[in-house]
Image (cartoon, rainbow, N blue to C red):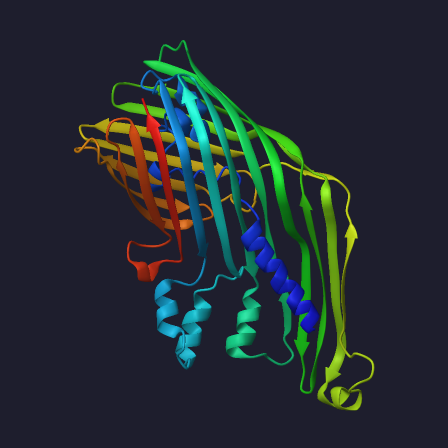
Length: 419
């Protein structure tokens, strides 16, 4: 039992710390505006958000991101306020009820993400993106917390099938281009695309996890098995496509389809990790009589070499709008994933942002995000932009503005230039 528990804990740590969020899109300016950036991104940022924006007349002649980095950690249940309230405290029944009510029926989900861009640049309508994206997630069955806080209930069948986790780490080299086309209904209409060359650093996924437990007056039954797969990869590719329309001097709209085509091959160090646990009608008398003899609870884990496989990055649709009025820029985005991964699910995401530019070299930003994998977030950011120099900083709180409501945090920063 101790051996199996150690395997599970190790797997969870590997999944959280060594997997990835491909195309994490943690652009500092975008994060400060709630990740509503599809119609606003220009220059080197357009490549990640909407390559068609490279064809707009206000796209910079040259831009470069010397280094841009973002990191996220969070969960779907526990806030900072709950941690401060209950850690170190003797829990009452009402405290336990409060804690359990905060965990969704699907279980506690937590994860970490990271994204890096280095020496990426754009020249007129062309852009090159260099970077890597890392992250992962794990899902812990709610029943486990019932055991911890409430104890076990006799004659009840506990099914623990919501244990899950996965992720991957991917390097990226992308080439983007955007240009104008004729249109009667818009002042300017552009189309663009990005061809991404990918390299798989690492992959991990729990593919099966089934456990059933039942307690009676004097003992218990437990049956379960699990499978996981790990690998490192080779080269792959994907294709993004987008369009952008400037309706008038104030309104611009855009749409992007990411990962429209392509896949990533995994063909190195492939391992299938499997295990089981099995015990029938085990009670206290059995332990006393058979101590030092045959194990009462049979459990084992082993690994086998796996065969080459490929993964398809989930397609994501983004639609965005930007409206300019005086010193303000207001943005709104809708994002829809068509698949589930470490960085995306099929829950729609809405985001809204604004940037105040009264002081040209000190833009101030704020935004709100709803839905998607993140759930609900509020963000703030600012930039220092004297001349062509850029230093942007942003933070998004998973929850309301106050720290006590936070279920996680995203921070991002970038140093670059724009001419």
